[in-house]
Image (cartoon, rainbow, N blue to C red; front, side):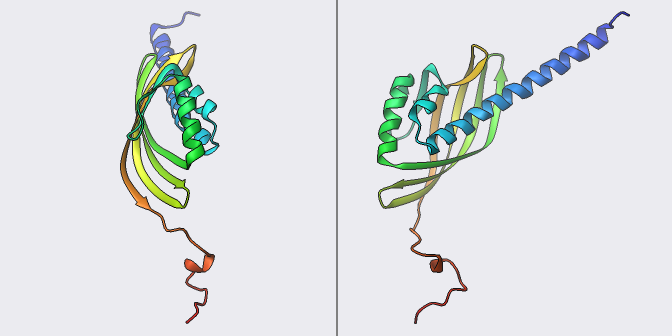
Length: 165
């Protein structure tokens, strides 16, 4: 039984569409794993998500280039503050073994007694290396910062709790 050209074209289109979905999901997983490793304060795991020559740009630090600089910087950051990132609305554009993306960030942070909420986004560049997607570059732009008042007890926010006169 001969396979028609149309049938082969359909199979090729389906294979390409599946590859597209798999690639996008692998890239989105990078952003989730990055946030997870930051929550876990695991600088080596954060750096492992980057290519060997990966770059991280933030508003407050010099550009970090390479896994070693990322590890060293993140270890210091983790010793100074607690970071709790939430990533979402990840948009990915594929181009063969390269890709770009924008990933939005809601951040909770604590440094000593100071607590903040912040919003921003990452502009990312990705590269497939040995069959795996990695972050080749990540530029962080922060848009807003809001101080958070530390809640002292449940009664501070529970309207049903009787208040002393």
